Structure formats: C-alpha cells, structure tokens
Length: 146
Image 1 (spheres, rainbow, N blue to C red):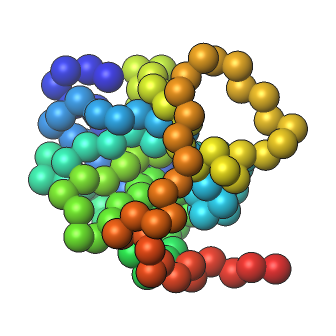
Image 2 (cartoon, rainbow, N blue to C red; image 1 turned 135 degrees about the horizontal axis):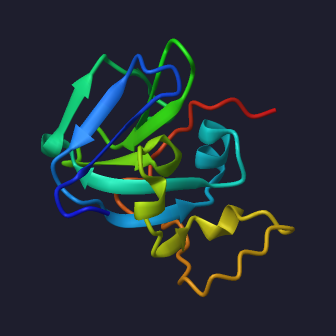
Image 3 (tube, rainbow, N blue to C red; image 1 turned 45 degrees about the vertical axis):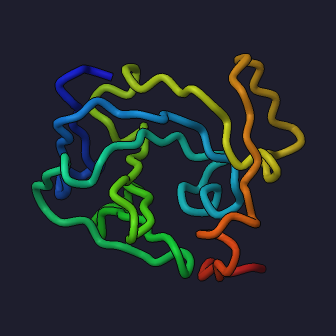
C-alpha cells in the first residue's frame, strides 16, 4: 500500500472512500460469514483506523452478526467494509480499492471454513478463528442459514 493512504469505492461511483494511512493486516478471510458477505470463496481485506477514513457518498450498513457490521453501496451492491462497531479499526475489500495490486495479503484467516477444493499455495501463514475469544464468544450470526 502507498505510505500516504489509499482510495476506492463501489462499481457505480455513488460511494467513495479515502484513508490517509497505509493499510495494515492485509488478509484473506475464509470464514463462512465473509464468504456469504462477498459472495465468493473468501474475502480479501485491508485494515485501517476508522479515524483516517473520509467518505464521498454514504455506504449502507448491515449488522451481519451481533458483533460486526458490513458496509456496502445500496445502489449497486458492492461490498466495501467489515468492522466491529466497538473497534477503532475497519477493513476494506481489496477489490474495491482503486489500486488493489498495492494491497498484498499477509495471512489467511478463518481457515476452518476454507473450501476443501481451494488450494492457494502462496506460502502465507494460516490462522483459525478464535471462537472462544472474548468478542466472538457470544456472537450471534444474522446471516441466513439454509
């Protein structure tokens, strides 16, 4: 990521964002909630402090669980963010960045839900979701289960 931050937005242009900081903790998330939220086999996310972000247009938000919310464009549906409301940090979808090439993932998270046929051999470390962690211990998903 560029040292002076990054910009991005949705596919129709109604919602744009800019962060004045370079992203930290760029990662792939394979958890089932992220799979559903981005409609793909994993989410690719870049993390920044919320206070560094400015918006042009306003995203809509969906509380995907009792502890997290996801931002998206209500006009075109582009997934844009993931955040815990009580955290100072938020994640942006790498695909919504103006320069996604600059956001190089460092780790695969939530690998307990990684699809068995997906074989990404990039040598990155893997992490399992800590379901016993304080934040996630009592989490209730608001995503439909079919």
